[in-house]
Each structure stands twice: as structure tokens, then as C-alpha cells.
Length: 171
Image (cartoon, rainbow, N blue to C red; front, side, top):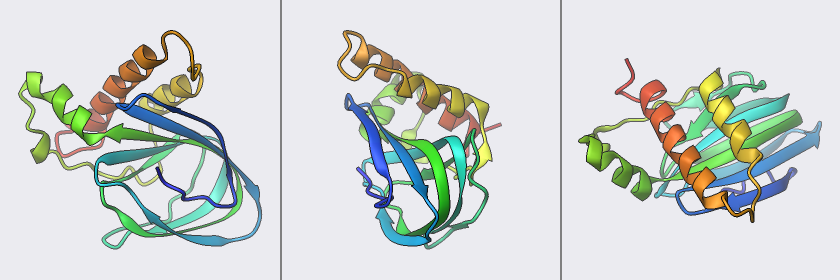
């Protein structure tokens, strides 16, 4: 998991393997710079649920400075590394980690060559579909009788949304 936001606090964490989610809350004015790295086996989708913050990510080949507002999202690609600066942060968001091995297995029956997919960072673009999925995930009870089923369903929906909207396979 990422520890991108040392001045924030994780409100809640749920994990079933195919999808894990960390709900974060930030509430401070100072500017902070932190090193970041996404795991090799994970695609990170950061969905912004409420509030706003000033934000800059320098991820080597790309720099993101676009506004962070509710309903927007950005991604961390597998093996991304760099730094993030953030300040005037009064925000609520969720990190959704999709397991790449599970994504690959989900796509095999449909004949989609997972290795040919290139994910594209939305760069804090508004995305109602990802926002809807993220909001559903944060409502899932961590130890409920259907937690795994609901998270696996969300993982399927999120995988489809990322491929359809934020990959080289997008129309």
C-alpha cells in the first residue's frame, strides 16, 4: 500500500485481494512533499470524494498539476515513483488498488491481451463512472457477509471502466 499522505489519516481500509481500498482524509494548510511509489503488481486509482487541495505530482515521465476536486480521479501506474507536493488540503478521497494478476485473469476469457493495454492517467479529470464505483466501495462494510462479493464486483466494474475510459483501448 502507498503511504502518500503522512499528514492525513486513513479513515478506513478494506481488502479482499482483487481490490483494496484506503479512505483518506486530509485537513491542513501547510505544503508537504513526499516520495511515492506504486507497487509493481498494482494499479492505483485515486478518486476524490469531497473537498479540494493544491497538488503536484512529479512522476518522472509525467507531471500532474491539475485541480483536485470532487468527482475527479488520477492513477498511479505499476512501478510509478517520484514525489507529490500537496497543500491547502481539505479533502476526502479513496485509493483503490487493483491487483494486476487478477485483472489479467479476468480478461483472459474475453481474449483481451492484458500486456497490450496501456493505462492513461486521467490527470484529475472528472469521471462519473469511477466516482460512482469509488462511492460504492467506501460504503461496503469491512467485515460484512458479502464484503468479498461486493469488492470483487467493484473490481470488475473498475477494471472495465479503466479499460474503456483510460487506456489505449478506449474508443
